Length: 130
Image 1 (cartoon, one colour):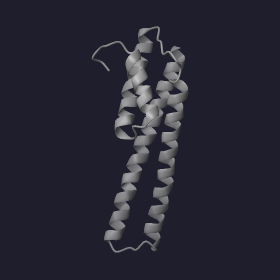
Image 2 (cartoon, one colour):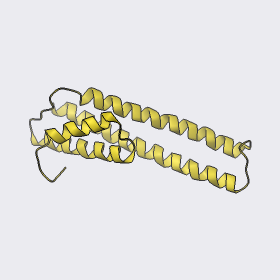
Image 3 (tube, helix red, strand yellow):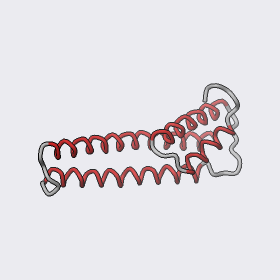
Image 4 (cartoon, helix red, strand yellow):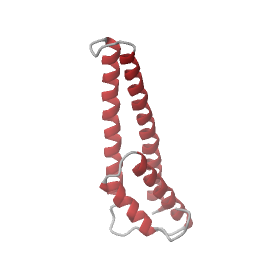
């Protein structure tokens, strides 16, 4: 169980970092596009067309990451009973809970994240660390 939890936790951390990077690139592209329009470029000019193309690619990548996140949560945390057997498992569950809560607050609050967060909350003992 520990190895599986660690793999899920590691993948959650990877997805979190990738979502952060993609979101940051989307914001930068938005500001660059606004700046280009402010400087007098039109949508037919090369720079705005290129920025719009990059923004579409980043948006598609962002949607793909969210899809991967949902699949990970539904496949890994969809078991009927979530049990752990050691302090390392507890620490991994706490890390997963924090990561999912961050992802929910920052990027998406769709049912797979809400469901995973609720399951982890029920699996964790009542204590202030999560």
